[in-house]
Amino acid sequence: MQIVGNEVYTLLDYSKQFTESGEELAVAEVLTKKNPMIEDAVTIESNSDAGHLYAVRTGIPEGTWRRAYKGIQPQKGQLKQVTESFGTLSNLSIVDKLIAEKGGKVSQVRAGQAKTIIEGMANTMGKTLLYGSHKKNEEQFTGLASRYNVLPANGFDQEDSSRNVVSALGDTSNGCTSIYLVTWDTDKVFTFFPKGTKAGLQHEDMTPNGPHMIDDGNGGRLPVYEEYFEWKLGLCVQDWRYAGRVCNIDADTTGAELRAALDELMNRVDMGGGKPVLYMNKATRFKLQQAIDGKSNVYFTKDVPVYPQVMNYNGLPVRVCDFISSTEAVIS
Image (cartoon, rainbow, N blue to C red; front, top):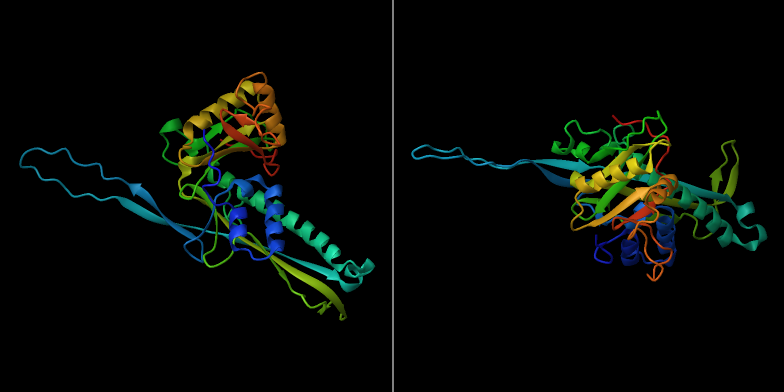
């Protein structure tokens, strides 16, 4: 399976295009190192400042078998509009003047605090891409797990996202994990930022000319350095056929069961024209690696000039995503 390289925009590409300061570009690079989905995801500017609006075809005209002198009824395609929501993740860094100026290294102290906040926000966004639920928390957007959370009633005949959910047969209550297959593309599965805003995590120094005074909560005042961080992001699954999930993987799932479920998922998910990637946590990758040891065409060979080498399964890159939980509920 050919992987699209430079043909699509990622968050880092947008940062290079629209960010004027090298500092913000460094922020984007930190984020992609912390979250492989952010590094892989195609990112676009949405068509609305309230989310991203797209149309879904709900009915296709089937035509009429006609005979002489018998009329036909006109038909038309049916569409419905869907608006995907986005979330705004924010944080503040406040450093007391006494601490920031200790040793005369204000910039280094502030940068260290900012890096910690950025990493924490990257963790939160990574978890939300998987487990976010706009229904449970309206400030969030809906992640992949909430979209692919029911096994199909009629297998491959289903016409909704449940068709692309395959069970690895594990049954440990709150002891399961999943593998996600996502085909990133601008009209299939992608992330977006609101119209008229900037991509990625934005950073604003609230004290560019030195510390300012704030209340300490006890009637006193103190001088601080302050920075504001904001990240607006949404996930759009415009065509559910281009993503899916192997669920119910537990400690008792055998390598053969894991491979069988993964092969079935790859047979169900459409991957044409986009950038398909497999995501799993380290424990699952180890189990898969054990199941395919000795097989050919699984890894990049040593003569391929790629470092670090990327594990592949049947031509698809396998990305370790530590945000994928090992305490998922059993999906039925």
